[in-house]
Length: 402
Picture: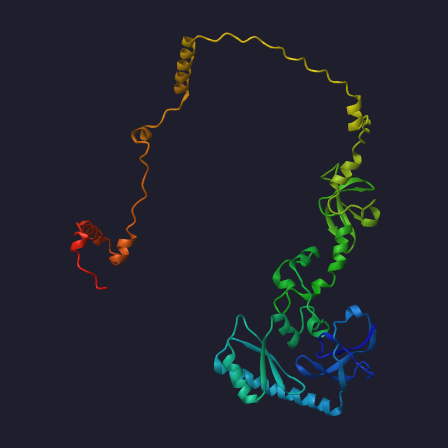
């Protein structure tokens, strides 16, 4: 267990843990802390409290001091400067003709850095813009591109329910939301009705998802065969919130449908999904038990109980058979040669005309001649003719330049 204090830097921002040291902080105070961006003044949303070590990401940074009246006056002065910087940055964006929308400006507590938050559909080359802003404010400039959900959280507004945005009011982090949640909750899949002002799926779809998952697990789905007090029927509709299902009698498909509560059904929470197969198995007669087979003896026992093998009779000497005459042997050899020739497959005519040692030669490459002649194939014949000229004897050749 460790003693920490929770500090929040924005109204609906995330709560960060800091080491209070010997300071005693209460909820509602302001404190000066050291962050990765430098000195910051934050709101104490949670006083000194012990939390398990598993919830802490070490190392914890220590709180410097409680905020004084001078510190709070400096914070109000930075808020005034932020509005002026916002107007200047918008004018610079128009001068550079950049496709970006400025959302918010933030000064650090020590005025060592100014952060500009903007949105854009693609990547923006704002290097010249940073140079102009640095020449105006004479401090470090940082531009950060954010998404549409972060933009809605910074600006705030009213949702389709008439209440302020959840992200701008109490949500610390954004939770993943999918279209599957709207489908399981029985909502319209029209993007206009299930999307928020930011254009993304509404964050409130996540609030009741765990409850719907549990109700779907214990409620028979549409098309399942269930047993009711009046007999077996097929589920044609369901209401997860009311805990009821509409059942059509299986014996009379054209009969009137009846609504049943899950508490009136026998074992309604046992099956999960389609329980048709489960009910059919319950009606099947039990299989007769198989007769036990006699156990097979061990391998060593089988060898010991096996009958003794009888010895093979000895082969006595057999008199040599008389040799066949030479004329008969020659006749047999000739007959076997003729038989093998007749069974041999006939060779195609193309192979018969070719000699055995006449193998196809690879095509001659004119690549070297083309490189010598600059890739012109018309000069290949002339080159071959020059190479075919008879050369003079070696002793009549002119001495080389060497």
